[in-house]
Length: 469
Image (cartoon, rainbow, N blue to C red; front, side, top):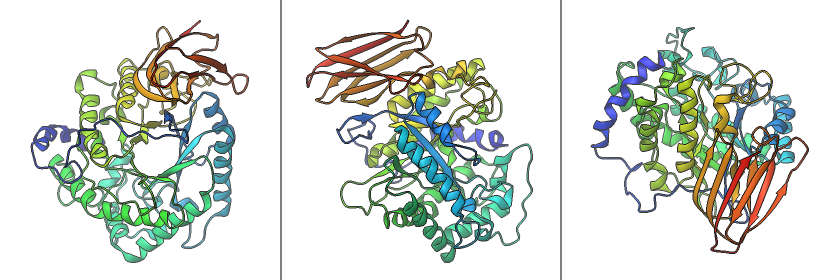
């Protein structure tokens, strides 16, 4: 039903583009380069990795395995229902488990975005322990009829829409939510791996009218983003900032951004001292692929998405982290091309990404086969990349067929570090460098990724070419 309910939204994008824009896309800037995230040396971070622990199954060994492949980011999916099963009573065993995962990320050099996750609001509507706890769920007795063939259709059930409305509107539930967020921030502050928080996964809300009508969906999404959702984000920013003044805080649009509909979120003020640390965390899913089809490269999905995604973060100078993306099965011909195009596109507009979802299997979004090796269609995900770029990027590319990676940049005074994944260069690599530069090769542990660390005089134009043996 997700495809049937959302596919028509694309037809309205052209009409929307001629209408007056809200403050979300107003005041275009001449600076259209994506906002980068940097380390303490001013180097641009290349952030990439995976979602973990939605199903309460991730172990420190998984964190180590992700790090061993050369990835440097995880999106740690936590859920209010699991962590606060009764009002004011926190599950310390669950928090202890999450702290162990954070400790592992500290140990293996990963950064972590903690995601406040929900799907179809919460457990009352068949979501396991995912989302808002039952004690914070109010639906006024409205009906909910589950669709076993389409979990996403639950968002359009009257009970779920009313539950979202109460969460946004009821003062006591708002206070409970604020308290929970502050408690989580208090638990996790001090971890050197903590990059920030994704404040609410795939927000939804009430729809006034026929939810199968794309025009109604777009109007409802815009009203939600401008009103109730924006107000919630302001509250939650304040709640986290009451105990954590340094982490990045990421806001999500509704899922319609995946249909090429620009967000109508406003800008947000960060109460911390110093520069704001508010980022943008959209998802990057093709609805037809989500519903089992092989991707059609002629459908314009990637181009429409890129066109829709840029105005908001550019207007407000926000870094983009794509919190979720990836097809259920990357090894079909169209989906293999989709993965390649998505990785290439995100290199242009995003500071980083986390793919859905770390694990082994055949299909089911897993990037690894049963043997633990990357699926062939996911080769671009496991490609080399500049993990810390000391300078200005001039060009970056990867040819999976020849295992050739090329990086071109104008150097600053620091050292650029390039990740050489073991799945790509298990037999070694040939590395050529130009631009008066010096290179050192390192490997943290046997069987792990290697790195090429390149230093060059400030202002030198450097080209690094890595080819598999």
